[in-house]
Image 1 (cartoon, rainbow, N blue to C red):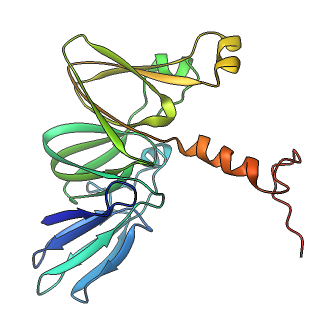
Image 2 (cartoon, helix red, strand yellow):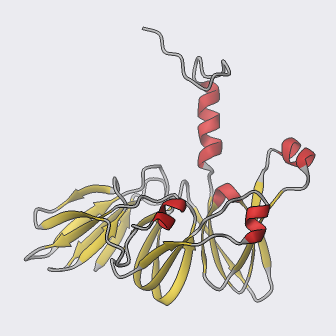
Image 3 (cartoon, one colour):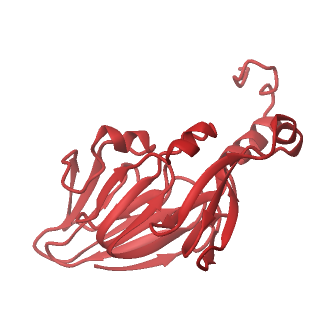
Length: 234
């Protein structure tokens, strides 16, 4: 499998070149285009795919699309649903954790499951259920905005707003907590944060989708009447 990114970083487009017989797995709705030699199959098999009820807890679909080049090489193009970047990770019998909705595509041999963030995260009110991407092969994760990389030494910690976290290596320890007390949370405009402790790498996105959506809603006529609906007049 060969791939390249175009239109980075704001509107990243993933172009995948498949040899005859090769397959790539992708989230429903990720496909932009493909060559005639590529077939599409929607699957819910548990053999390394997004299919279990636990995966749904991670914010991902229980179904996934398999794109296979049949008889001759083919091309598939994929993109995230929001403006932003895509990051490639080559796993070698290791684990990469990704937050809800960050999974875009992978080698079908990658096992994808959901793991709870632990008792501390649940007590913090985070209810974080990261996806665990395990095995050997390519993984592609998406982000809203650009992607920043943080390298942590052994014992070194770094704090990221919960809304901006994208992924982290399996060897990195993590915990979730609220920013200060209730008063601090309300006055600072911040809510939950995740603290990561190395060694390992953490990736975060430069924009927050929820914050962006709230900003857009504030300027839409009729959206501030308190009922949560946008009023449209004809």
